[in-house]
Image (cartoon, rainbow, N blue to C red; front, side, top):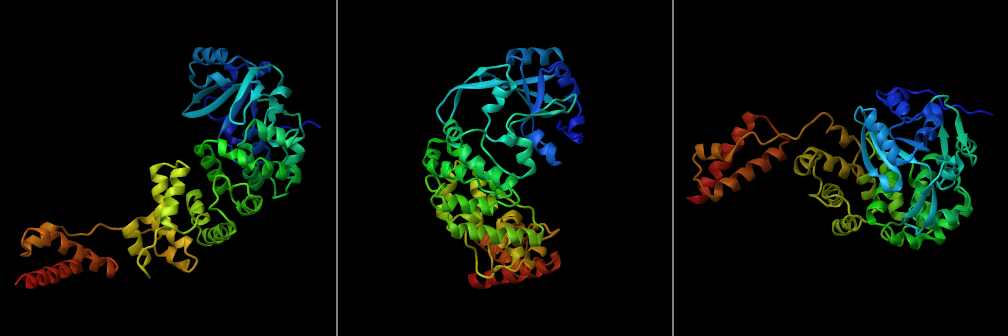
Length: 403
């Protein structure tokens, strides 16, 4: 039975037809592949678009140049050119076959055989191609049936696929969470468990990227339980255990209850032991960006007892306060509502205003300003009139102390 890729909005993005014309898609030289086909068949939004082609990468680059399309040689040594159309990147990769692999990178050779290209991919649902003109789907390994059954299968032997690229261990659980309906293939699971130590050979950036993608999915808890129970994360993240997975489950429920958008970093914080120092070490080990590491540490840092939500947001920022409130199972979810539509204000008075009130310039000014701010926060950010009263009282107190 012929399967057609449904038409969708992404197919009509500006510049795409010109790109397909340049690649001679009508002549059978280019097809959509991977995620766009998979998600397109499921009726999901398509953000990233990949095109497979029988054209040599240098030929691709020349054709794009002739068509006036920006071409970036992002991975030309591996056959990939990125076309930029209307600010939208489209990866174009020449059909390939693996000559040799070492679990991290592959030596490839180009081919004009679509099935041979499909055979080097990881899962059957990712080895689907669609003709851009006729929308006919090419399925060499039963990916359409697996997609309909929400079944995740490696192409061929699971152990062999993992040996080619160790990252496929983590990808298996990410795709299981999103597309597999949590139906576990015991052969694939055993292969992942047996090869888990090979994750140590991967860069920590690749591990972090894959883990955060898993955590960003709608329902990652079951997949993570399987990973923890199978000892799969132990070689690279031994700190993650069943207790952390349970915390993650609570957090996800609280995100849903409050309507706060899920955050992969917040979910990572839930997985980790609630310890700032260890979070800092793990963030460094995963080579997270400085911004991401700061957020992770801030989420797990303990603050003043019984601190009100707005006071917390003023001290650590809105993002940090929401992370902490959601991560704390004892914090009422209603506390989140007190932050909706509110922006932490700046103290509406300066040290100069305290000097004008008679405070002697010097160290006392900074101390007095801190005292004014502490009282202002304690009173839940009253208006300028009340701040002026607090300033008068504070200056008077400091003046008496100096007499």
